[in-house]
Length: 426
Image 1: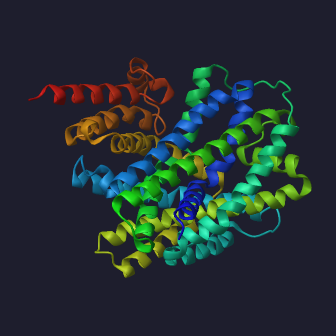
Image 2: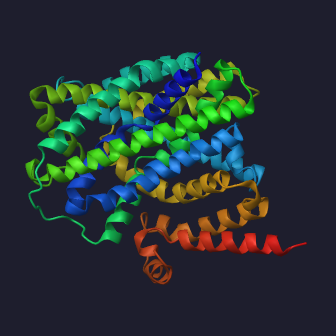
């Protein structure tokens, strides 16, 4: 296959595997909240929903292994526990959420079908794709993603040119609040998790279908990742801008899904709901396929690549998807938040450490930075579960802790200290 064509196919596949439920419903709502300063929230959102995930893909291009390789420098035991937690969260929350979003936005407006029926059919089809993983990249990259991109660009193009800048009161106003709001809302896309999970899927799929040297595959994955990242940024920024430009046209106190539905109707008219339904179904479906394929790959690798284990894992993951996917989107988002506050900081740090040059990321640096990140992210995690007075006293003295980013400065400082110590050692 032509190298350029293959790069485009992998880039489209990456884009589609990243682009799921949260990627659609979150950006327009952020635009409504941010108002005229929408570009600040777009910047924050891009950090956790574009930059970090694509760095994850670049790290995979360097490692060309499995997710286990992401954390093995800390310790093999830690890496195994991390992988189990990551795949458990991915299978139990973002994958089922794609079915829930599909039902609420693509099925319920047209048919009076129970959510459990939608989930059963949805994950039945997901299972078929997962079991035909050798054709995964071509099916997604050649056919599904281009349709997603076309529909999105039409909505954004019409929205930007047709929108007005009528002033509407916004929820948050200061630039820093907007940036941090965008960063934390970017957590809900699960894209950092997807960068680690989906990157492994791409590596395994390429190894199964493509011959080439390490350097050739690294170049292919890196170029595809950068192209997918650029596409994600354009779409996110466009949807956030549309949320701002058309905010006066949305229903008062509209939810995330209502804003997205209104956006499609305002830009594409009566046919907008149909277009949006197709878009939502495609975007959600490809993400679910990527997550379950990644989980099945990992569990299978623990049993010497057993195809039987791969199938069993895919079945169990699909059943979990059916059960959790029968709940509404708002419930799944609320349940996901504590889990994200727990796993996201460690995931971001592991991605960054794997992306930087080897000389700055020794085993000692990995262990120290990950440990400090975990310690300083515990208060952020706990405050979403329980209300404890002494937690407020702790967060008040940790920089950025009030923004649920208390781990950032300590992790950066310990990274610098450990590298400085290692440079001085003979």
